[in-house]
Image 1 (cartoon, rainbow, N blue to C red):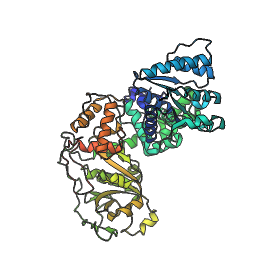
Image 2: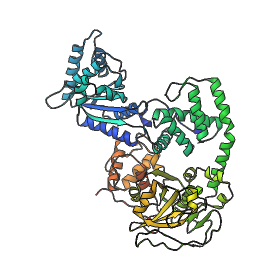
Image 3: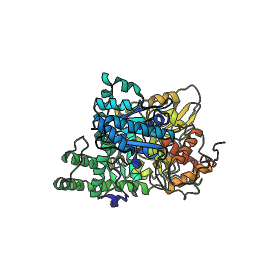
Image 4: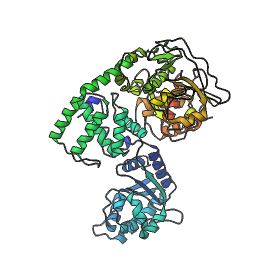
Length: 602
């Protein structure tokens, strides 16, 4: 219903296990690596567990898609409510082994054994995958264990993967299944997504579905999705599908908490509750849903107006040259006399603060940093400071003309993501030192004192709830605080105060959205980039994010000191984006331009 409105090729939140939509969280990457390791090294038994709807089946489909069909035989058992003879017959049928109607266990095992010996002689691997294995009776599980006895002197003839819900662990822990439990040498468990991963999960599925509009969820909406789904992908899909329907009815592309709440109530009204169920359309419920959604249309339109107005006041830099910005940048729209003095970053390690002139207005620039007296605005002001550091200064007079509710209601990251700014972000939790390797100014959330405490706080040691790390020299940090000005303190002292690190970087080509299996011009451009740096090697040209692309990305990550996952995570996307631009602000010195490098593998 809503695909045409959002410019989607297909439904992004379908409940079918399509491997193209698989979002590779850290746990999913680890599980996939465990599957590959277990099969490649012929470990015999592999166990994959996870909550209902956590993506086990989708991960399995992705694993199967990457197998070499010419060198692998696969028996995939989806119906786990089977007796011992039925299981053996199903395995043989999946492998293409003839099965007689009255065939017993002995005949089935003998036929399977002959098949495995013949295929092993050809150098082929045979894999048995049993989904929903928690439904298997203990006797059937014991029969599966007996299949692992089919082996030669050197190798197992069949590799067995059991996939199931967490109760499968309790079943395997029973005394009568101890022999089977001991044979499982590779185990992996998929846990739910965290809040940050939910954001990337939703964005990934929208991208794969071909969304042509900038569909976004506000932070409160994402919080609501998290609390409803508890990080379970299937529940996220169910809720986001309903939320897109609500947004379509309202005629908006930004989804806020009210729309998510309406979607959640609709699911409950149709019997969904917190369980994932098949929904049957209910005309009366849908009519109530549509009318309730239309009531909030006016408030959504007002929010959209505020965002678009804020964006329209951004000073526009010259058009891009080559891969990135030109070195020429626009002057700040409000250039105040630089009232700050250079902070001393070396010395005894005590915190120091620059002196400033009297305030010249509620919102103002001082030395290129945004200042505001009200601590409630700290995050908005810090994001404006980051935009200024990247030479995208805003006209802060816009904020002086708006009421507090409007300003705090702005989705500033969505504004910053618009062209030509094209900012992206990823969180590093408390890993400040890890994020420092990118040499970029960082948005820091710190434990903020109450308003009452702020009134009597010592300006030399206080920090607002959100600040920007702008300089680093000899383990001494300089922080742009929107309330207190420039603050200098030792890195260890700042680390103790940090609750969340957010890396903000420009990614005009949206590299972070590229995923395995995708075919697009953007993938082709990435291949050209990796080729220019010498990481592509002799692999053939392609527009597909295939195994060659994964290997090239791993080589790039290894050379850049990143974990070689083969996936484009936030840090990898940031590094690639920086290498494709000519300007970015640095932590360790004056902002400068980087020469295009070609330091690929030697």
